[in-house]
Length: 85
Image (cartoon, rainbow, N blue to C red; front, side, top):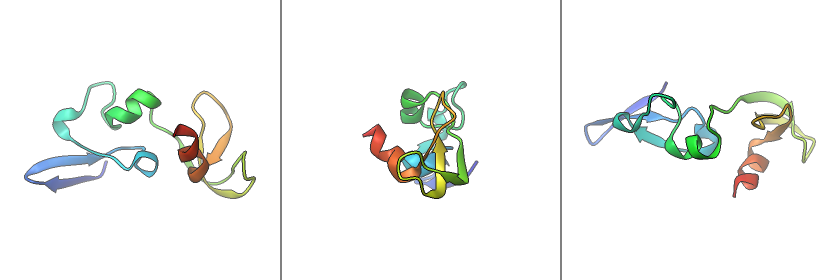
C-alpha cells in the first residue's frame, strides 16, 4: 500500500492505480474495499490482476496487461482503458 500526505490528510493509492489513477483518503476506505477506490469498487468490485509480458487479445502484442474480470483473457492497459470508456 503506497501512501502520501496531502494537506495533513493521509491518502492511499488505489491498488488499480495504473487503470484509474486514483488516490483516496483513509476515511473513504470501506471494509470490503480497503485497497481500491470507490470508482474501482463500482466498476470492477475487485482488485485487478496486472501482469507483465502477457499477450493482449486485441493487438496481440506482449506487454503489461490486465486480466479481464471473470475471464482468463488479458488486454494491454491501453485497450483495457479504452473499453471502460
